[in-house]
Image 1: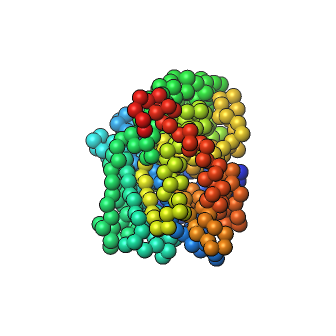
Image 2: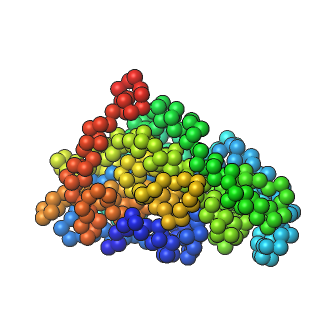
Image 3: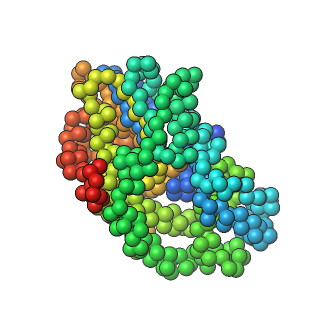
Amino acid sequence: MLVIKKSVFVFFCALVPFVINDNINFNMRSSLRFSTKNPYYFKELNNLNYNDFTPKKIWAIYRHGTRFPGKKTISKYIGLIDHIDTLKDASFLTSDEKSAFEKWKPLTIDLNHQKFLTKEGEEELYNLGTRFRSQFMNNFKEDQANITIKHTPTQRTNISARKFVEGLFQSTANNHKIVEVARDDIILRPYKGCPLWRKTVKKNPATLKEKISLIESVTVDNLINEMREMTQIKDLDFADIELIYNVCGFETAWRHLPHNGKSIWCSLFKNEQHIGIMEYLEDMEYYWVDGPGFEITRKIACRTVDDMLNQLDPSNGKQSLSFYFTHSGTILKLLTFLELYKDDFQLTADKLNYQRLWRTSYIDSFASNIVVVLYESNKYGPHIQFLHQENVVEIPNCKVNEFGMCSYHEFRGFYENKIKECNLSTICNRKDEL
């Protein structure tokens, strides 16, 4: 049984073959570095059958699958076709790459479908459901377990939930109620109802000072000049490079006219340092907006964890399955609250640390998921196990056994005080009691 320790997670991901969107085989995991635009990757099901331990309750939270961009990005994306004549004659490209650029056309996207789930996103969630069924459902009685399914009020989480349920329950999928929660639901999207976080973090220009500092540095100036010279696009600026980086991720996730498994636009990032800088810029932004950069962000997922502990409480003997479908912001804040992928340094502009644990390409891709399993054991008592991206991960601040499991009571004990202090009215400076 493989347990991924947080100190080695990044290196493990870079060494093993994965299946992208369950359909395309690659030995190129480490080259898929598009931050939160990364396609979901899956290797193989782990064996989660253990002597003396039986799954009794499961709490799971999923980011929606691959989606379309927002309206601004869609409009700019269409404009990339203006660079094709220059690129198809570029000396740094291979003949195959030049040919791919000649054939390239942007994917047609209705502006009314901005941020909608794509068919690839539907596949990601359906396949997650089928694998969950294979992994766990032999231990649960569908007609007797308490089953909760909730999603935020967006098309991409709604369809993600429905596709997951189809994969999970197959012919009985329509028997299960899927609930749409409020936009600022305190479990699925707590930051939406937190005015103090929006004011001091999300809308605070100082939050992005490290990212802006790096964009204005000699490091990024060199990147721009090198890419101008390489592509021969004379007016290429950082905004163009950022767009190409995002399109590289989106088109790879959409499998749109793939060249060697990725968008042809990825071929502009032949320099490993260039893609590393772009990824670091994204990671810095998410670190300060949705991650451990500010104290309020580190606290804001407390009610999400409170719900997890209550749903998994072994004192209620009935089987239960809880499935939540949400967004990148919730996944990252939850990982932060749980202290997963916690570095011992901040992400700043003065040092590009490539050995960091906070790598959104790996920890917050499309369809990212956190599954927490309560096991009952007559011999050892109730234990919990964390799976992130369908791999067992070591639970921070808790003594784990050989299967990566931690005593439920020890885990709850560690977070008890943090949960007791979890008053979002106080944390978020709200007048109403949440």
